[in-house]
Length: 73
View 1: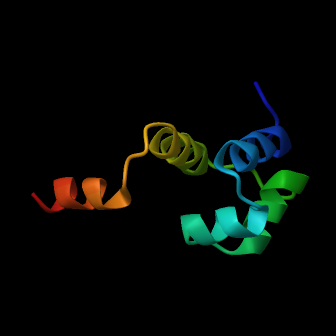
View 2: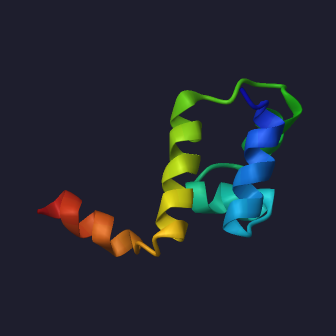
């Protein structure tokens, strides 16, 4: 199992984002990402799942609007 630091680094590399940009994309504070990466706080399961979804979204070029439309239906 990867460490939080490795998971965040892999996610940022896959998405082509900085930690600051990843935080903005997720709607959380940049400091939160930094704390996870440094091991100050544990990386929650919901964040790992969100990383996975963001990577899938990029790999398959799925627009957020698609998800929003499905949720509204």
